[in-house]
Amino acid sequence: MLIEPKIIGGVCLSAHPLGLKKALEQQIEYVKEAGEITMPKRVLVLGGSTGYGLATRISSAFGGCAGTINISLERVPTEKKPASPGWYSNMYFDEAAKKEGLIAESLNADAFAHETRLTVIDKIRELFGQVDLVVYSLASPARKDPNSNEIYKSVLKPLGKTYTAKSVDFIRKTVAEVSIEAATEEEELNTVKVMGGGDWMLWINALLEANVLAEGAKSIAYSYIGPEITYAIYRSGTIGSAKENLEKTAGALDSMLKSIGGEAFVSVNKALVTRASSVIPVVPLYISLLYKIMKEKGIHEGCIEQMYRMLRTKIYGPNGTLRDENGLVHMDDWEMRKDVQDLIGARWDKINNENLESLTDIKGFREDFMRLHGFDWPSVDYGADVNPMG
Image 1 (cartoon, rainbow, N blue to C red):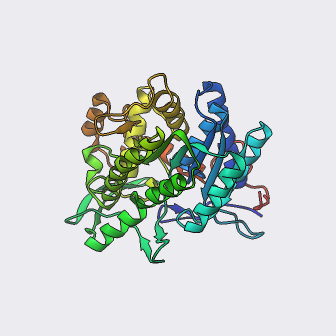
Image 2: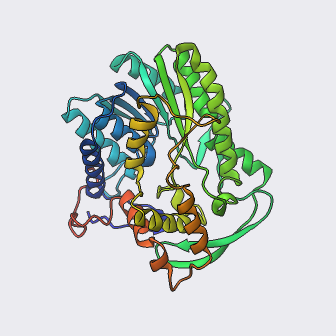
């Protein structure tokens, strides 16, 4: 069948298997060329099919020679409809890792369910005995509470009052003001239920009780803080409340894991194009401007560069985990440099439809978004029939 991009409201509903294979191969090649990571060899990734989770899995396997288990819930393909991007990434990753003699298993399951935790624990015992690193990188618009069966849905809204600011339609390449109504108290609480630390806590509790966490095991989750320009919709909005809860949970988990000589922490990452960030108002415009400036300065990183650097220098470097006074690992260190943020502040108010492409890297944003779904790779013939089963 012919697979073309189908984009509605900043969300791409299709995925091209050959493009996603190319994307995976490029990330593996980067890690291999960058050099070995000295790290433990047994890794569990919760949400390792796209974005930071996938990049962490690739870096662990092809940089650290680690065996990996991944859990993510993906749409499976049919003869008439392609799978979700993560389904293809999981399949191609497992194939590539096993070719190099690495343990690699991807479970297509609801990571929020107690039944999945039991299945994963059995799989850890079967393949590894115990794991040394647990990566929590789940991103979902909804979560079913495993105890009450209540379904919570997250929203991307400001708190307190309606927020109006510049945003960009990265497909049409147009700038316009957007207004977003403030979230209700219930919407904020529901977003915390979905994206906060509650499920991370359930996972670590279950793994500890089952004795499948090795002595000295680490667990990491991902967050974002960013500059004041994005605070209203991000850090000071509903998603920010969820991330603050995640960071608070890390402190509690850190204390728990001390019993086995381990630790838990949050890595604050750089703003990048992911399937989640592309639908947050204001953020795509900020990222496009950030890309332009960081590329000019030669310090731009994508997901794979970020996670490789994190594992090699911030977590398993010679000085162990490098955390600030709040217990956070900072992979946003280059993004938040004063020279970078000063330029963003100076250019932000000047951006309009006429100078969008000269002041920002909107082209790079769109390219990254399309490649998340397997499109826009020069070496792929998108006019050819492709088997959606991969």
